[in-house]
Amino acid sequence: MIRRIIPFILSAIVLAAHFLRFANFPIMIFSLAVPFLLLIKKRWALLTVQALTVAGGLFWIKVAVDNLWLRLAVGEPWLRMVAILLAVSLFTLWSAWLLASDTVAEKYL
Image (tube, rainbow, N blue to C red; front, side, top):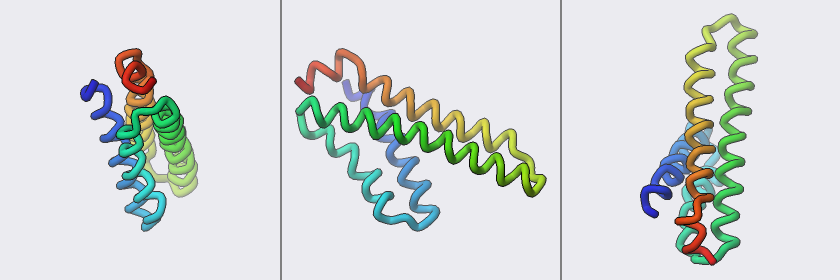
């Protein structure tokens, strides 16, 4: 089960680093605190973590689109940036999918 949780923790750390870059400390702390919800062995805790992880994946897509428009407007290269941010988004969504497995769900009944 720990192999299914580690990608989620990495996703939370990368998201927190993004917010730290922009000095958004409350959301950074929230991003770092979300993995600790998995210490609560209740179904609502797992569902909350899954929903927040999906929201994080969608947030990365929003960041990619916003940066794409910005880079297009100023004529900077954009393809590598979009590829990296979409890879981060897919990794985050994959980590949410891993948490939806039966192996993890049986621990949170």
